[in-house]
Amino acid sequence: MIVIVAAALVVAGGGTATSLGVARAAASETARQCTVAVGAGAAASRAAAASNTSAAKALTAAASVALPGGEGWKSTPYANRPAAKAVEAVAATKNTKAVVASPARPSGSELTSAVADGRNALTHTPLPTTCLTREDASAITGLAKKSTRERKALDARVAALTTDFAAFQTSEHTRVAAQVAAARKKAAEEAAAKKAAAEAAAKKAEAARVAAAERSAAAQSYSGGGSSGSSSSPPVRGRAPVSSGGGPVGGGPVRGGLGGNVGGGQVGSGAGHACVVSNGHGGTTVVPCK
Image (cartoon, rainbow, N blue to C red; front, side, top):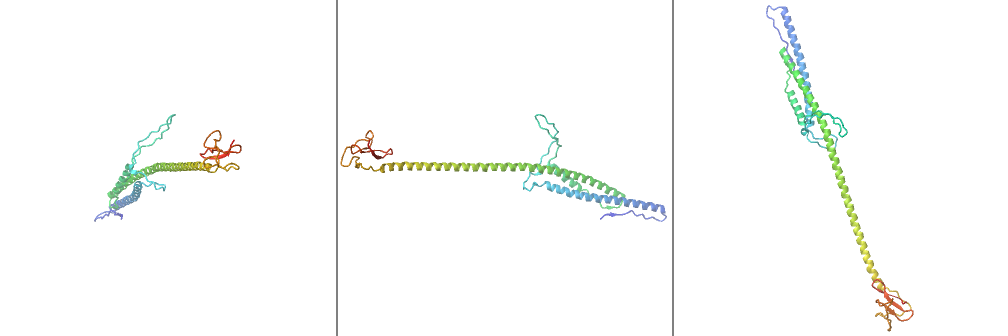
């Protein structure tokens, strides 16, 4: 409640109308000054409350590590953001790139502390709502001006914090995005290498299996060819049968065929005789003698 009390003047007996008029004018001026002062104080209080709310929101936002973008990424704490020194501009040369100038920057903890201190100062600047005298009006006006100064200082600190925090989040988003991209690339390369190794192992195993199968087939073909050659000598029509001893049935000379005694022999004698010779596979066969 705002209370403004105009000074009252009680004129004792013998007072004049002139003095009464002066007193009334003075009281009116006092009331006017109180009205102005209390109005300024009320406006300063409303503005201070709005600034205080904005500062609280800025501090809450700066305490968050959630990065914008919807990826669910997180940053390092803003309070750990280091300060930066001022950088002077440097023109590009043949061997160096240009350097863009940048001002010095406080640390994240310094900016948040500045806002917190500003809120505390603004909160502890009370603005009276009761005015009885011109002295009250003057005091209220002074406090309203002080509150306005503190509010403007807090607003500037909040703006600095908000701007720097936004830049911090952009930088952190870029950093985390690069880390995520590198991790995904590494995972893809490892998966590709694992797949290539598995395919190479499968090819090697298949080549070994095929080689083993070919060796087995060759061995079976070799042993089967020898048996068949020794047991399937074609019959010779019109020739004397060969006894189990390798000579002609009923007796008869047996001589080596093909120029020598090579484990075979001649069956009968003369033209049309049959000769037993090697078949080249460990067995024998019967052919006409030359």
